[in-house]
Amino acid sequence: MEASWAWFWVGVLLLLRIIELIIARFNTRWAIAQGGYEVGKGHYPLVVGVHLLFFFSLLWETRGGSPPLMKGGIVALLVFLLAQGCRLWSLSSLGRYWNTRIVVIPGHQPVLRGPYRYLRHPNYLVVMVELLCFPLIFNAWWTAVGISLLNGWILLFVRIPVEESALTEASHYKEMMGRRHRFFPWLIKESNQ
Image 1 (tube, rainbow, N blue to C red):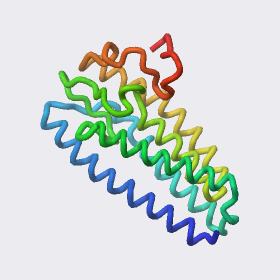
Image 2: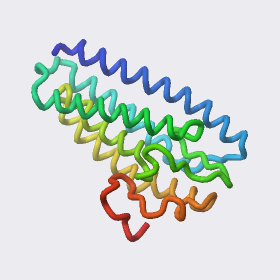
Image 3: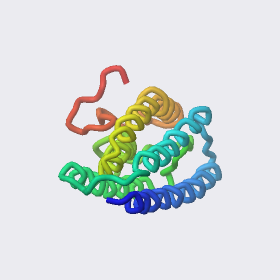
Image 4: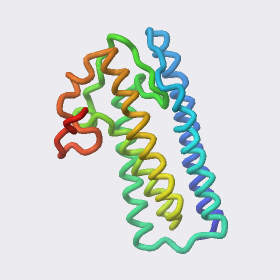
């Protein structure tokens, strides 16, 4: 595949993310009008930075072109497309509550429909899969591994604990989410959460 082919698809993905940011901005305004407030403002630039680094790293790694799509790339493409279906399911299930920021509306209960019937954070799982699989379509291994590790660290040790703590304070999050695991429905919930 020539670099221009990879760059075209990176551009398409970037355009989709920009559309999501616009939707998130509307959802933030709606949530604040409902009495909501934002938490985790301090780490939000880290989240944005990782996603920007993802695009720059991918463009840099594919600048000389990438080899033809091999079996591994086909598998990565199929998993990425499956993740897009899960992304749409997650976002449509959350509706106006979906956001790129952590905006909590006191008194509003957690969404328990769609994939949220089974998991606490299906959209974060989708993001992890995307950041790993999309670069692998173009054999961009450094981007896939490096960005995935960085994103995973921020999600697991910074963002999710802040989000779950804020939701627990503002609603019956812990009680309503029950024994749902963060990412894998077949595992028993972590005992320390």
